[in-house]
Image 1: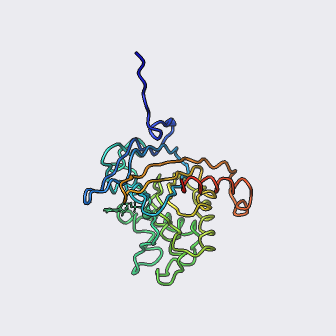
Image 2: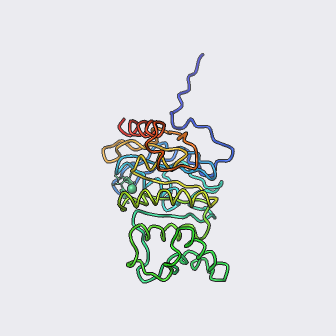
Image 3: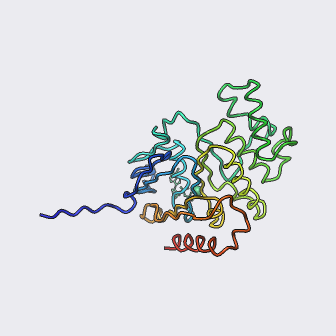
Length: 270
Ligand SMILES: Nc1ncnc2c1ncn2[C@@H]1O[C@H](COP(=O)(O)OP(=O)(O)O)[C@@H](O)[C@H]1O
Ligand SMILES: [Mg+2]
């Protein structure tokens, strides 16, 4: 007798030996409703990779990010960071959202210092780290400024410095440059690449900009579905970006760049 096994497409992935962030057949249901948002989400992200997640508004991208951050727990399946369940991970995670969420009554230095203060660290080496991060994001000279005295791009730099000051191995970004004007956004993308290359950090970024995803990422994940209408979202496509590094803006006009962008656009529209 022949027995056929049918393996769902997205469950059938090869786990790399050095996978740092993994998701295995994750489901998520908001119980109030209830609303089945995510289904059969499987991922394998190697340490040090830069992954971008794109998809229509309301599909479930932020929900997946919150699951990876350990702020929500999967309804079924597992998410692991360095072999620990995400919600019990001993490793800190750096988080940056679309709005900078800075404390308006604290200076740049005091905002960046916050995660270290929460860990009870305020020794000279902690203070040196704060200054190093401020320098790395290009804000030397603005240490004593308050958030109200900063432009939107500068405030997001502070948010990045704050997210990275405690050296998290994983940086989660949820449309971090979505509220910035186009030019500032492009500059911030380049800055993020520079910072990522200077630190041993794995980046998982939600963005609605296809060109930003192609410019920054090693791999772009496309999420599709319509949870509001009874179709929970899944990762429908994984598109590796075969562009050399370091990446430059000028690459955006190259045929290879355009080809990647077109493939992502087509995947989103399916
Ligand atoms: N706390 C919540 N309770 C119930 N439903 C929610 C909650 N947060 C988000 N949703 C719903 O889950 C779906 C996915 O939301 P979200 O992850 O924010 O999408 P995206 O980030 O892709 O725009 C949407 O239909 C949204 O309305
Ligand atoms: Mg969102």
